[in-house]
Each structure stands twice: as C-alpha cells, then as structure tokens.
Length: 219
Image (cartoon, rainbow, N blue to C red; front, side):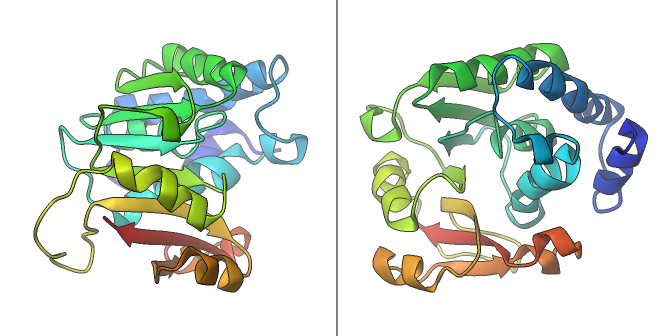
C-alpha cells in the first residue's frame, strides 16, 4: 500500500502548479475516504488503496483538457462519492461545482469530505438531473454513470448555450464531458452524436488508463 506522499507524487508528476493548500486538500482525501467508506461504501475495496490513481488522477484528466474559468458553474451528474467533482473542485477553487446524486447517503460522504478537506466551492443536491429546473451550467461532467445517450438527455437541457467556436487545442466549448471505459462503439452509435474522444493514457501514460477515455459533446 502506498503512503500518502507517494500518492501525491503520482498527482504532482503530471501537475506542477498546485498551491500548498491544494496539496493539503488532496492529501486529506485518502484518510477521509477510507474513514467514510467503512460507514457508507462508495468506493470498492479493490480501489480504496489506489484512490489517487483510480479516482483522483482519473478525475483530473478532465482538468488536463478543459479550461474551466473562474465563476463558471459545473454540474456533476450522478456524482456518487464525489468523482470527478471533488478533485476538480480542488483543482479549480474559483469554479462552483454542483454535485447531484439520487442516493442521499452518497452525498453525505461528499459533504463530510468537503468539510474535512476545507472544500468551499461544492454544493450538493439529492435529486435526479432530469428533475432540476431553473438552473443552467456551463458544463456537465460525469463518470461511468449511465450510457452516453442518457447523459445527453439529462445534461443538455441544463447547459447554457454559448455562441462562438472552440479556440485553441486545449479549449473545449461548453457541453458534456464524461469519463468512459472499454469498447464504446455501440454506446456512441446509440447516442446519435459523434463526441470528441480522447484516450486518457495519452494524457497520463499509466497502464491503468488503457481503454479509458474522455468524451466531449458540445452544447
């Protein structure tokens, strides 16, 4: 089992601009999730000792390609125990993240982790994304929650329509960004869209990320 400094080395191997506060918040995730996972299971036993690779770095693959700007509002659909939303909120402290899940006890873990790590830019809501009214977001993010077809149906009504084309290779126009794995051919066909698809192993060359992808669909 890795020690916390070694786990943070995995993160700082790919990101070199964290503040001391951000590094402290990241280091606290290990203990907080292990403590709460014994009460409310949100991470599988085989994953809990690899939380920084399997969950934190995986979530931060979105940060590596998306330019969320201060003041933006991001919704995490079906956030579970807080991925990708919690690591992204640490990475983007001036962006507001709204984490929603239909299972209340999972949000209890998210709220406890936020309190323990001093994360101030997350709100939670016990609901289904399709039941949210009168709120708009620049982006929706999600990780392995549902087929792409369903994620599009839930997220698109919640997204702001922003004019203008994408500019530059590292900029993603507002829309849905989701983390997926495996053979996605059928799932993409059934969605009726052609998402931009990025292999995570090209961002983080770790064997764990083989056959794992970021999908982006613009609003």
